[in-house]
Figure 1 (tube, rainbow, N blue to C red):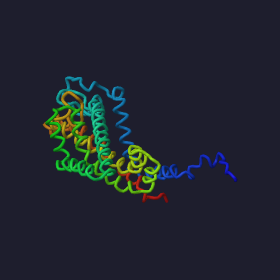
Figure 2 (figure 1 turned 90 degrees about the vertical axis):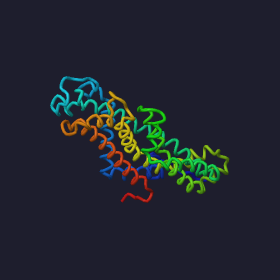
Figure 3 (figure 1 turned 45 degrees about the vertical axis):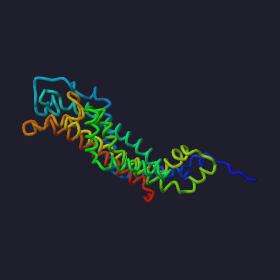
Figure 4 (figure 1 turned 180 degrees about the vertical axis):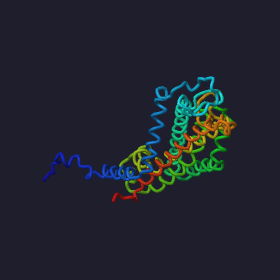
Length: 298
């Protein structure tokens, strides 16, 4: 019997490994998408500004000065609001609240919705019927209306906004996960795992979930921007973050009565929301193309 010895060059040759070759192909497809790279750059910029807000912000976001409603200048880059607080500093600190709202609420909807969808698709029968009727009941309410119902029940706070937005996204993840599991559970490798005695939990989380993860990752990336938009809308209505918390939606609401005399109070927080939503959509679109198995690198 003969054996083939792996040389150092072949041992680390990624082209001989389907996993690394597939990963390389996806990275190349993503890197070729200029819109996706722009989205990543914008998100990284906001993340860094949020993390280092104390070092970057020129003023205390809660400190009031004598120059209220001052137009943008060298001292106050984004001007001051009606109380004399620096809008630029408040936008930087508001990035922490808004980004945290988007990530936490999407994570909540992703984990709960994916778990429910996987159970429904794998077991079928009465389990599928029970879970999907619950999901249909949630879908009967528009996302914003469902969030308003949760806020009305629990009270106005940024934590409740995260919960409300997360609950409103559960149906999308549940339906997507269920559809993926229904197609994957019939494949041969799932039957092979059953034959060798793998537990249901192992089949679900180690065999099915990794192969159903691509569309869920794309959806969650797109939902981050939507979650920030909905959360900012709730804060704009006075149902989210409460004064004097620097939050983009609340800051936009503070300047709505001053739009003709002090346009900068609402404009710059609104542009911040726009940039993050656009960045998440661009990044999500790039991931969709990169993770599509039909795409090939030329």
